[in-house]
Image (tube, one colour):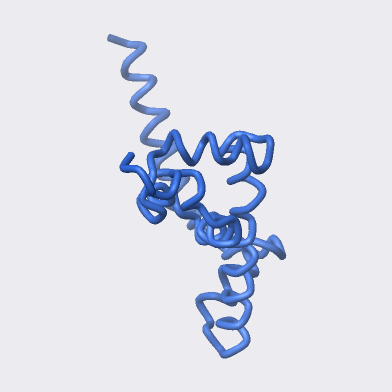
Length: 122
């Protein structure tokens, strides 16, 4: 470090760090953003939060989940049928009805049964 340079840990801004976690940025991306090493971010987290980066990230990245959920709901409200169906499956236990023709199943079962009988004869 050149004399007069800002110490690496001082380059990390807490509010910005938290926003980057909320955008699901990785440790590498956050370190690159601030122009510091990954070890510096890890050390900064321990000093600032008394937790590892992973622990802080778990708590702060949930903001991204909340934002995504809000965008999905807005999209569904605007008439995005695909999003409405997806949200219904995820949150309302809605499922698509799948019908299987029993004739096809009976035919397959008969063929399988005959194949097993023939295998026993051999």
